[in-house]
Length: 112
Image 1 (cartoon, rainbow, N blue to C red):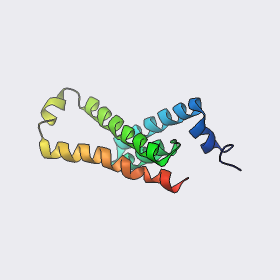
Image 2: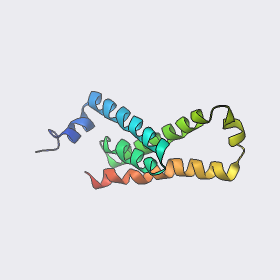
Image 3: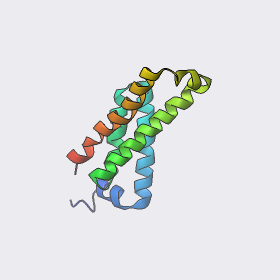
Image 4: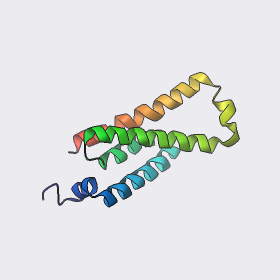
């Protein structure tokens, strides 16, 4: 079966399927990351698999990391102000929130 007729090929080329797949990947990724930190890697992998190129896959993985960090900030509620003053912890949180999904985006390079 050629890549243009496979499901992954259609998801990467059809704009409507692409948007649905990316939104679904982000939703599942945020849900997994809310349970365990390995969900950050899964979020990056899922988001990047919908990308047409490896470079865009890395961008989608960073988008997934930003979405997870935003969901985490919203979940803190009013405690986000005092929590943002905990600088070493904030560095680790933001670093892991961006680096782990980027690591997960290597899945797009493996699955061509």
